[in-house]
Length: 234
Image (cartoon, rainbow, N blue to C red; front, side, top):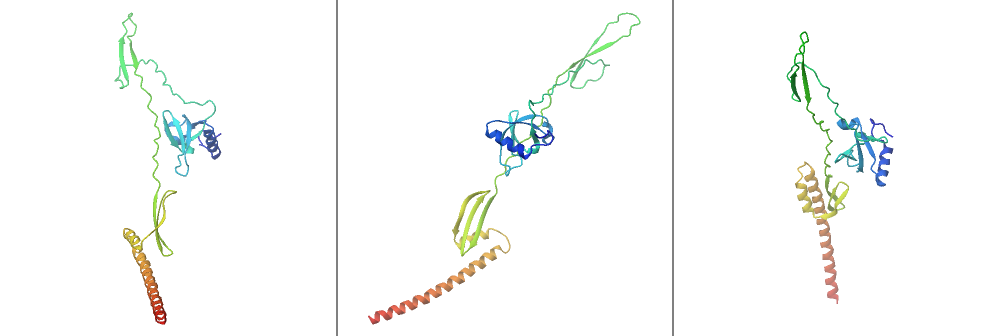
């Protein structure tokens, strides 16, 4: 069992995960790393993905359910409960007339003289205005940032493809786009050298296509000439 000032160990996190799977909500005590709520007791209601956030231990504290890091909490000892701090009763104060603090109301009641030689005394009765304990600071849950979005334009084996992915989720599998569309996409990226590289690839593809077209035209002309000879012979 982890000490109150150390936080949860890896084995204790696994034990909590198994307890949650069994339908229990283990109690934990906040460590000094949690700030002003140190020493208070809460219940673990969920363990989120530690790969997304370091604060993956969701603890119910009062009416709130907030995420904490393993270092912020430790396994609570048996019988532990929420610590209640009761204000100490104020003792009756006998004092000379002074300017009272805003929290106190002074009512002075003079005591009549009883006999000659007795010292005149004045009792000051102090009524204490009870003030509510200041609310403890509650850790505000950090909103989870959306996963990053990646759009990839790729050229391979004579084809341009576009793919999109958000975090580990694939939004669009690679699909083929026309060279003109690829050039327009690259034009939006104002990075020296990128557009030139794309234009060089397109120029090389254009030259290769022209060579293939010229070769096919020559082969077609040869086939047509052979066909004409065969017709004459027939």
